[in-house]
Image (cartoon, rainbow, N blue to C red):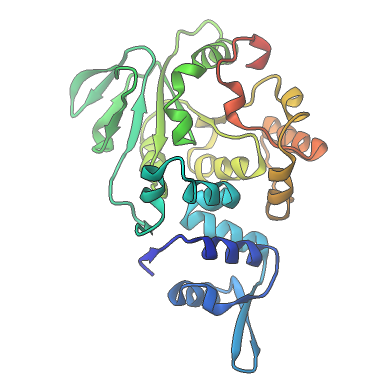
Length: 300
C-alpha cells in the first residue's frame, strides 16, 4: 500500500474501530483493510454477503496507525484541520485531492533561531539566523552540525513552530532552571509529517534534545515511542514546573478521547511518570499554546 487518502469517512471509520465497533470493510481502502487484516490488527466478521472488521486490540491498532501516520494521534483535531474553511492552503496539503504518503516527498526538517547560532554545513561555518517570518529548511541534514553548546528544541506542532518568538521568555526561563550557569544557545526544529529525518539527525549529533509538545497522553506516547526509544537520555520531555496548576483547568474532551488508547502508558522516567499520574488524576490535558507569552518563572 503506497498511499493513504485521508477522508472524513476514513477518519470516522478509524474512530469506530478504536472504540471496538464493527466497521464495514467497504468503508476502508481495500489495500489498507487487507493490510490490517493480514497483520492481525483487525478481525473479519461476516454477515451473509456483508463483511465487517473489528479491532483485535485497540491500543495495538492505534500504535500501528500512528507509526504510519503520526498525525492520527489526535483524530478530532485532524478532522478539524482537514475540513476547516479558514486555511484552504494547509487543507490542500493533507486532504482533498492530495495524499499522505508513508515516505514524504521532501527530505529534511525546518530550523529556526531567536538568536544567531553557529553551525557547520558541508564543512563550512555558517550562522543560522532566519529573519522573523521566515525559517530555514535543511534537506542535506547529514552534513548539518550545530555547535556543541547548542540545545535542540523540537516543536511538535508546525503552527506553534511559526510562533516560536512568542515563547521566547518561556524557553529562556526553562533553560535557566534546567541548565544553571550554562550559556546555552537554542536551535528550534520541526519535522515534516510522517518523516523520520529529524530523529535520524538527532541520533547522529551529540546535542541535548528537548521535546516540546502537548501535555497529554498521546504527546507522551509520541515522545517515548519515537524519540526516547531512539535517543535515550539525550532526549528530555519539557515539563513546566506549574503543569499541575495548568492541568486543573485543562481539556477534558481530549483526555476522554485518548484514555482508551493510552490508559496503560507508563515510563521509567520519574518526571514523565509523575506527569502521567497528574493527567489521570485530573482527567485533563493541556495544550502547549497555553505557554505563549509566559513570562512568569513558575510557568517554566
